[in-house]
Length: 238
Image (cartoon, rainbow, N blue to C red; front, side, top):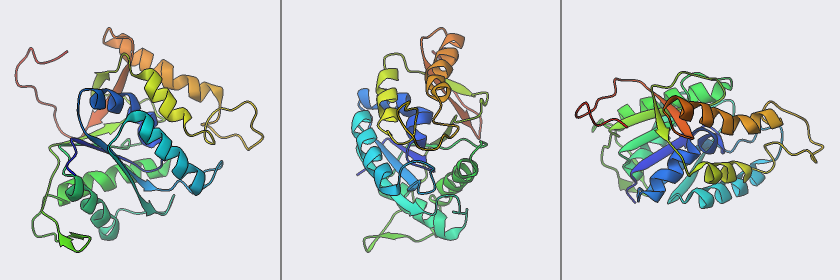
């Protein structure tokens, strides 16, 4: 299955939090989108790997993505090496996305920065013909995505561009709240973490509102890039 967009997250819920509204919008425009989670989130304070799996499946349904996979890397301990790069290359060559979305380049959780660099490096390596990979016993062709964008996570990193997501915030929030074990629940007796506060849940909306305000829209999501953005002409901006 060829996809237009493939979004990677170090943990289940990273993609929803970072770019869920953008994904929902792209799906509504007829784009095919997939999600690949690097780990099962098994070190999360709340919930289990099994509950995260069920939550991720529900979130994928809400966003309308065409595929979701989990590579089962060790939460907290995966590294950017040949073994892990090859697993991601297999996913890139399997789905042949034009655009890859991945974790923030720098963030509070160490897996986010690691995951960002790992996926970015794999995107480049995936285009090298002499790197041989197989999937289900079949040799894969080299494939390099045209664009790699990094969504914004915990830190308020200055975006290089924003996407107008008016009309898609409710869908994003529903996909986030599909992770019932992870976020604000006043009835929960489980330990508190930085992402279980009401302030964090509210921040999903007020960050999008603030980025939207800056471009005269109701809501927006921000992204950073590793190389210059290019436009075909001066009037091809929103």
